[in-house]
Amino acid sequence: MQKDNAKVAATVSTESWAHRHESPMQGFILANRASLGSLAVFLTMLLIFIIANPTVFTSWALYSSVLTTLPVAIFLTVPLVFVVTVGEIDLSFPATMGLSAWMFALVVHAGFDPFLGFAAAIVMGAALGALVGALVVYGNLSSLIATLGMNFVLRGLILIFTEGKSIAMPTLNETAAFKIFSSEVFGLPIQIVWAILFTIFSALLYSRHRFGVQVHMVGDNPDSAAQMGINVNLVRLKTFVFVGIAAAIAGVFSAMINFTWWPTSGDGYLLPVLASVFVGGTPTWGGIGTVFGGAIGALTVSFIQTGIVGAGLSGFYVQFFNGLIIILSLLGHRWNQIRYR
Amino acid sequence: MTETLIELKNIKKSYGNVYALGGVDLNVQKGEVVGLLGDNGAGKSTLIKILAGAIRPTSGEIIVRGKPVSGWNAARSREAGIETVFQDRALAVQQSIVRNIFMGNELVNAFGFLNVKKELSEAHRLMREIGFTSKVFSPHSIVGQLSGGERQGVAIARAIHKQAELIVLDEPTTALSLTETAKVFHFVRQVKASGRSIVFIGHNIHHVYDIADRFLVIDRGKVALEIAKDRIKSAEELVRFMEHIAHPEESEKEGKVKPTFKKKGEA
Image (cartoon, rainbow over the protein chains, first blue to last red):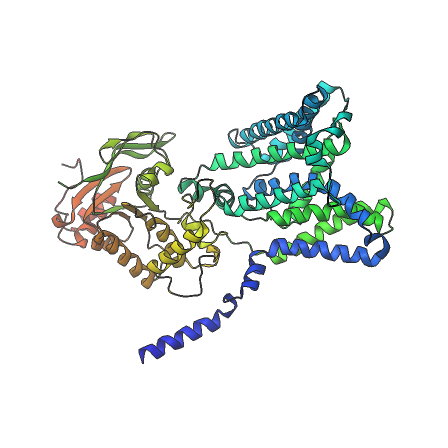
């Protein structure tokens, strides 16, 4: 008798919570709803473009050009997901990218191996990330304002010291580093392979590594994290260092594509990259986010400009559609995500 | 002589000119339940936050198993085998149950990557132990979806997974239903039976009286009374003492019987 009762109770509770007993497929969708939403946004956009101009959007040349510049955006967007998740923002990455790539250009220009230049750029990026992070975390400044200020300061230093002169690196073409980081593989720009590897590594770091899960905890509830013995300030600082390192990689990739380093290197990425993070489905309030979504967001944002022109509209439409897609995907994510407090 | 697990000596904490704690001693023996009592703002939570390393004392000494320690912080406190269930539960509500259980104490390999399998099986075991028998929740459930009692369960699961030697419970029954409260008491008795120690902070004197072996009453940042349970006749006597220190004149005027024990420093 008692057994029967228990059975009944069990059935009742299963029924009333039936939606929780999801299949693995449903579980996967629920767990990745933000990044899948971003993917849906991209695919919808692509579909509209294809309908608008089938000949252009079924030719490979268009995609190939996007895939050459996209990696730079991905290297900037993905680590920014960490910063936003931890509850901060970093607007200094364009100048960090410019300054680190400058180190690369100086080393290569002086006749050293590009690998050495790459290493110098990464050290520079990490140091700048640590500087910006320390200012925010230990100086207890608003990351929005402090990183904006640092972006101007660092860019200003570049301009003061170079007097606006660019550095050409024509010898880059024959080096091993160029083959590894800037050639083609199976008809694809090799940069995209590095960007995909970086995204996968970052996604593992984000959700399967102690650093990533502590980033979530600190962004969700810094007081709780501190009470549980997490070094909240150090975790915050590390996210800025991560952005610095990745911005250096982005800067070197960008310099290798153009065989030239410009003093404005990185400047154009500030707003598109910021938009990519949020178009990708990472909310502004911290604690949660998605690395894959961020990479897809970068793809969407990079594609808009090429897409608008390819669809046969004049360049004057680019900004309007850029904004429209950002707003629409934010509305979509808002509806798609519940905020727990 | 029992083993002294931890000793706080002459702990002072001031915020500017305001003293939250004005020199408090607290010691916990192995296997005992210490009841920490006091009015709102007496300094109970400040004291246990110092014990948990969440805030730093202005001055004072912390001695773990007979050895004075320096640089005491939350991580050191947990390393020393002290787990605290904070009044606000210290959860991250947008994260899963398993992530909250292992917050700040992730099970990782040499490269810092999570041992997801082990964490999940451990979380399953802990959830059963705490009484999450319903299949409604999995270790992947988001804490924000849970009720107050269930959240308390997650906080307690976190406190027991490391076999801590001392578990500090700060007002663990606040805002809990009767069955949930009963669960917490059942848990306290289990811990005690396994030879581990507990510091139990509570408003409800009857609750604390039932469960504790020794009482520490804090009043305005000082220890007003430290007494073993066998020296008190009943919970009522403890209640009268608390009333007496709260309003000394009033309780005498009303002709209430004075408690048989005196406030520290009282003639």
